[in-house]
Image (cartoon, rainbow, N blue to C red; front, side, top):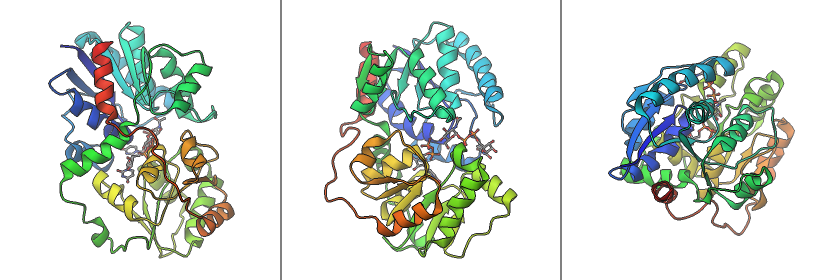
Length: 352
Ligand code: UD1
Ligand code: UDP
């Protein structure tokens, strides 16, 4: 049986890995390594419980720190695990420091790397994620892309072998959550929300949180909007809001991060979503909810081209105007694949 070490560590990676791990069961010997990049219950364990992800064999407990320190710690610890386990493949997801450390540790040991969500580019090298993506893709032996655009980005960088369009595993995750969670979430009644009568917001990107002016501009826009806003706050953002002493207007309801089923339920019934998250832009599209992206560029260009996503950056005037003047397009195309991406990935790995 093929042996795979899956390296995960941050919230979106738990969500992406869940359907792939399920598709591997009984076919591939999967060993899960949690780097410990995210560690709060609401950023980590909740997703293992909700999505039925097997307990990691290794938790490297790296925790938070500067990029070099965090990536270095992961690299050292992942290398040790890989030397012990000697897998056929290392499987990595997305563009976090855990992704980069997994790719680098494997490549240095001549272990093959398979990258899920390959080929995404923002063309903004100030983003830590862009650096992680570029290096990871160039070290990968199998590249799983969600779209033709992603394939084109790789082609432009000379990566043409072992590139596969498989769709997006996050679409599988929504289906899996519905299947595993069974009954639907009661979060709407808990938060006293009526469908279409509120906006949902998330902010966590370094480019917004580490720049006081950008963050204040976004938060002020939330305060100035005249609608109820549900705002589950990433711990990174929570710390900075506290430091700035920013006070929300009563219509902005901030909370701890939500579990995945609750999050999907709140997304599904929102009138609009305001976010700088990568994953949430796609979820908004799949759920047919208009999205305002609080960034200057996006990797998920198709959502903008189809009119379902508007880029505003952090400018409060632009954000408010976009929310108030948005017109829903009449058409909604299928984006990032319909068929289960996870099964395609497992099949290709088994044949490679
Ligand atoms: C990371 C990823 C980002 C991804 C995001 C998903 C990198 C460079 N960035 O950003 O691409 O979009 O995860 O959410 O890998 N913290 C806690 N508890 C936790 C986790 C984090 O309090 O469980 C706080 C710490 O103060 C930490 C800060 O959040 O310093 C940032 O965490 P980190 O993992 O470094 O980056 P994210 O902003 O979460
Ligand atoms: N998410 C969640 N609870 C929250 C915020 C986000 O379950 O409070 C989920 C969201 O539905 C999506 C994923 O986390 O599936 C996105 O992760 P995040 O925004 O942290 O990272 P990004 O996608 O930007 O890398």
